[in-house]
Image (cartoon, rainbow, N blue to C red; front, side, top):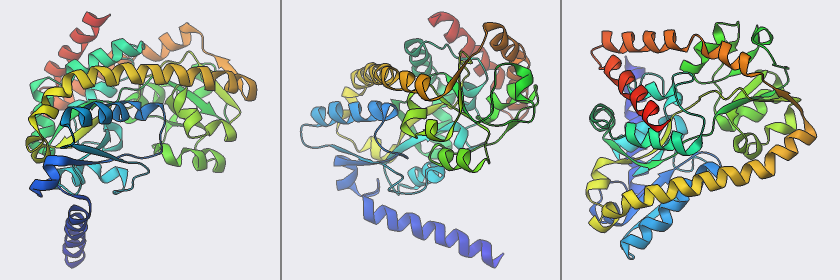
Length: 344
């Protein structure tokens, strides 16, 4: 009990220190003019969205607003972003739902296997619409004192590593990095899903603690240099992965100049455009390099269909579990499927 109290006190003290150091939402002056944004890794295609928002929102703020992007987890560990944003240790940060099991249960609907379209624009459209659903807004606000403010959609996932995967039979016993709900589709065929964060992927592959790493194709493999410690890469798997988004502390949002708030919808659309451009540019850079350095394993559509064949059961199990805990799981699943169908 004493250790628990000491640990809790240390966590609060750390948050308080960060709040004083980095300009928390509790400081009226800082909240009106500055958002400190925490994100892991360096500049890459994935960060094009927040970088685009920075330009547009600071322009709208006319000198009264600054969005400071802190790369490399400079403000704190990525796994603590929700807690740090909630208490105002920093104003805003990158969130990927799969990094926080059970912390955003309704939003995890977006990480169900094969539920989202592969096309980037369609995927972005679906995510933007789902983020406006009242139940999702409430989950972020009531549980985490935060709101969605920026898109961070990801391309479909492929696998890179040191085990050759061409059929579902090849997955048996393979330690594969993939998010929790998507992992269930692979477990059916004997895969051993293991969660490893993006910055830890290189060492995990190099040491053999992971055989094959699921990542958005192609930018993420290039950004984290996984091709340097791999032999194979798939093309055609097209799986889903993390649901990522940019969030801001509600108190900081409410204290932000109205001109910045009003500029947000247009800035979001521009961020989507810039992200798609960045992903496309990354493909032109990385895919030829992968083809040169690795064995590219083309996945037959029948294999992908085999993987996707059990998705409906996984979706139903997710909805039933959420319903059983008093959350509108069935309603949310139905809504997401209707949005996907609309954008198809």
